Amino acid sequence: MKESLIKNVQLEKYLKNVFLTSHDPVSKDTNLSKNINPEKPLPLDRTAQPDFEYGFYEPKHIPLGKVTLRKVFKFISEHHVDAKVNNATRIAEEYLLPEKTIENILKYFKMYELYIPKERKVKATFAGPVVPRKRFITEKQKLLESFAKNKKDAL
Image 1 (cartoon, rainbow, N blue to C red):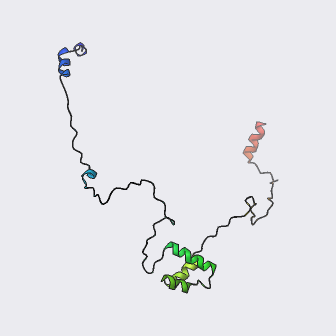
Image 2 (tube, rainbow, N blue to C red):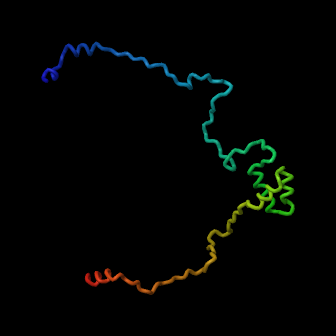
Image 3 (cartoon, one colour):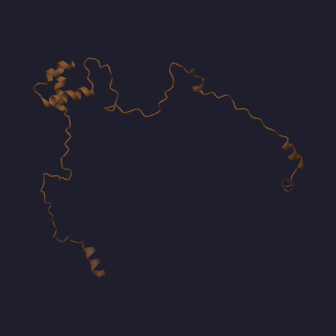
């Protein structure tokens, strides 16, 4: 035990003569091994791209029998303004859609209307009474017999 606590000069001398050299292995990164095409440079603009108006990309080419959400909103709002001129038949001819589909769209979908009051501090009116009514309970509740006995004993 004492021998392990004593400093060995010969072992210390050996340790001073030891030198390590290390070499890192070659990286097998797949991104570095790919050929970078100079015709397709990496993007330089790292800012966030703006969101689309209706939450998703609208295609530039729409096949026949299909319509974008923007156009649906347009013909629903036009029908809402003047239903006689912008009827289902005219809309079906304009957008090349089946008339039954247009009738169903006009029947089951409506545009929301935004109402902004002119005065900001207007009290809202409700369907019920304007003056709140208070109702007081005047009946005493019956106590359980065991609770009433314990209460009398405590007094």
